[in-house]
Amino acid sequence: MAQPSPTSAQPAQLCVTAEDELFDEEFLQTWRREGFQVTYIPFQSDRKSYIAALDAVKHGLRVSEVYAIISFGDAASFCLTHYLKLPNTNKLCALIAYYPTAIPGPASQYPASMQVLVHLANQTVNVHYPPSKTSHKATVVRKQVGPGVGIGDRLALGYPAFSYVGALPGFAEHDLEEYSRIPAQVAWSRTLGALQRGFRRVAAVDLERVWDEMQEARYFSPNEAALLPPPPPPESEANTAASPPPSALYTPTLQGATGHNPLQDFYATNFHAHRPASMRLQLLSRTVGADRVVDEVLITFLHSQPMDWILPGVPPTHREVKIVVVSIARLCSGDGRLYSEHVYWDQASVLVQVGLLDPGVVPAGWPRVQRVPVVGGEAAAAVLAGAVEGVSGGDGDFSDLDSGSGDGSGEESGEEDDSFASRETGEDGVASGREGAEEQIPLEGLTVSSGEG
Image 1 (cartoon, rainbow, N blue to C red):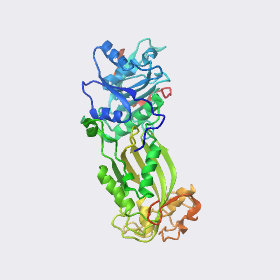
Image 2 (cartoon, rainbow, N blue to C red):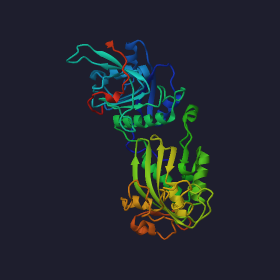
Image 3 (tube, rainbow, N blue to C red):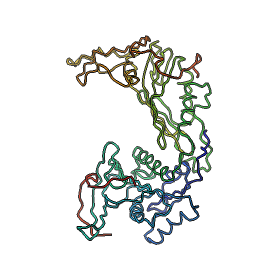
Image 4 (cartoon, rainbow, N blue to C red):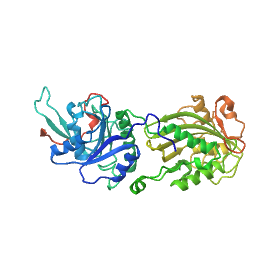
């Protein structure tokens, strides 16, 4: 397991606050695994006592140290208003608000020194508008949260905010019925990124290095123990219960495993016991986020032995395969443990190349279709070349493309294999205001100023 990088700091102070006396322990423990010193403070009706409890988090911080707050529900509403005032933000580097019941007006601006991030569910919120030139009274308008911009659903507010329209308030709390895994994970990654920017700290471990070491063990090394390094021993039994098992899903074939030992066996069986010596890999692109590494990889191999991760149940065809594979590895930025790996590729292209799918054979009942719209090795070649040549747009005519049967000649790419640098395996396979009427309008329709908070 990778050791903390030299840039790692002492545990950063993180305050989590919500209405209940007790909070989702799994949520708290996960932040501790990320390297934060976590304090939970219940929301209080006595505002003075509540503010004093929040301020106590920063007591004892050294001159250069800061802290952050993650808030939920009514506590989030209070924090969003309270920390709009500059004197209240001393040493606060980040404020995260999950499904607040009220938010500041869309033109509100927070101090540039503080990261602000708001997660809104499928809910109505009270939008607080301050007095203006035309109205000397503060107003409150109730609005329905709608979709944001693009598939990321960013809302048009003066501070970073996103909508999760398919989720209900509570979607990020594991102990509630409203918990929804996918929006919770998306919000989690955004939150982690905001905290890392706020604290100006990098991950405790180099996620890219950790992932490269796992890939080295999978494709080029005979060391099975390095395939999936065990996580560090838990500090407590509660930590063990809160730690999710690692998993991998090879989506096109539904291969994979969940749990440390089953996943270790999956990697060993599929990539050590059945790894062609001809396999070559080239990294085409890589994106490293707050908690994940996304790779686009060109993989070529001669299908000379069973390979159940990509062709389950198919005996060796002795045909060459060229395929672009995309993997998304989610890792713990605190200790480098693998949470999950999702892998995708064009399975139809693989089937064309090994001879199991003929694009020229169209099923009966489709008289106007001359060719099944799939391709073989040309797909990988086009990605490698950075362009698509000779493909007509949208008319279903793929007759000018070679069938890409993958006979091992390498001719479908139009260039030699060593036109790119790649890795090979060896011979052994190693290598407060008046309240207005409710308006059912989406928030992104508001006229706002831009800003990242």
